[in-house]
Image 1 (cartoon, rainbow, N blue to C red):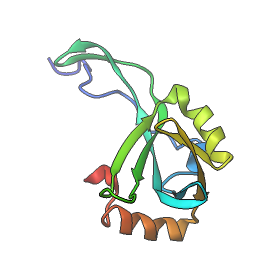
Image 2: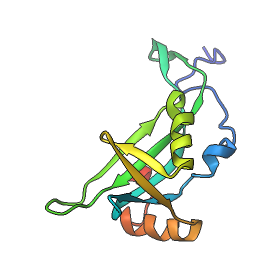
Image 3: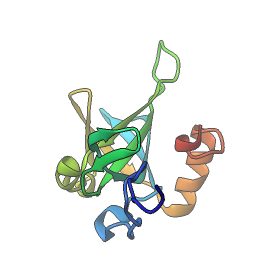
Image 4: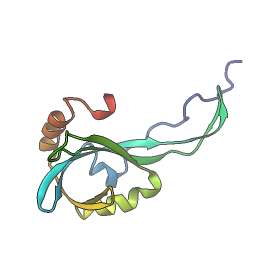
Length: 138
């Protein structure tokens, strides 16, 4: 039954990252809490789709949207380095971008300040903090 076109994966061609999100693509921000460095945050744009029906070879998908995969490395006194990640879904992305534009981020209910690093410094910090690989590849 060739040619039926039942997609295993979402049927889309990945478009360019929207300009506003592209500003933060693969960028690192230093997280500052109470005036002191508290860790780092890395942003990776990600195409976001959901399977809304079907099974096996007969799947249906939502339209794609852009999301941001946020990787955090939060070392702190009295505990080991804590690496975690979160996904900013398309419906929440504009509000999150507003916060990033204002150099702020809310994590675990706490508002912290962000100091965005330039592209070269972002690459160096990402390599040091996430073991020389994109976190998505680990």
